[in-house]
Length: 327
Image 1 (cartoon, rainbow, N blue to C red):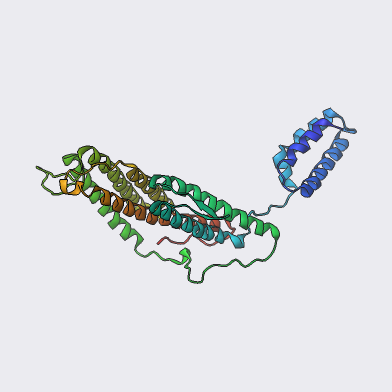
Image 2: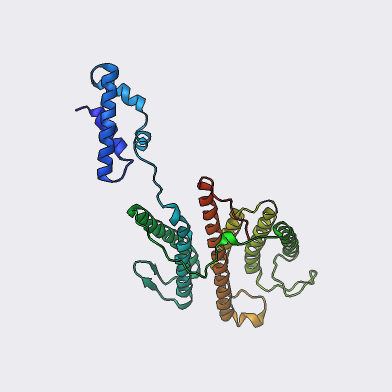
């Protein structure tokens, strides 16, 4: 028994799954090492084995030489990864919205469990839900691939492949959009610098009438200004690139800022007496619209992730089709 050889084989076995497959590979590696040692040194000793093992390379690389490369998910099933993840996450989002509005919990074992939560907790919960959905779909598609069975996976006939969407006049629209967002950002910044808030009831900057109390108006204005600036930067970036990563980053920032808006205290926020009496209903209405905005942004993020995933899959295929133009 040669301890150095057994240790090397044990380390190599860590990189292979399946007991039967691992034993076959390790037996073959052991035979190759022993044969090479005898051929080069005449007899097998700890010293000669150490020199041969050193020439074989790291255990992980050696284990990879003896196994044919197999995809984790078969190419025919890869397009379903983002489709089914989007469907599951859409259901997660709807039930999360219901949990926030109706203050109730929902469970559909073993697909998901949505506890009763507030608006901010929902924004923290949703990314975790997306990762769970992606992992669950990946696991199922991996098991289907390993079964080596031809399984026709269902998908609604009314769905439209995003790859088929055309994008005429993309550059013109990008320039117009960037110009509009730049003008909006400049105007909002001017109002904020002049009035210390962007929420005013009149445009008489010499005697502005703020909608909110100074502290509340300042905080909300900073968050909304950050959203506008993020939108402007994304619009300018679209002039030079059609990458979906721009949209994904912009939507991620917007979702985080919506979460900050939902976390803001809303106790006696108005500077107008008539609105102060209606603060409760106005808060509920504002939360509803912010959650709707979060839903729209989340759908856009799913759209971006689907397109990015398909582009990555297309590029990973030898001679695969070129990435589709963006909408």
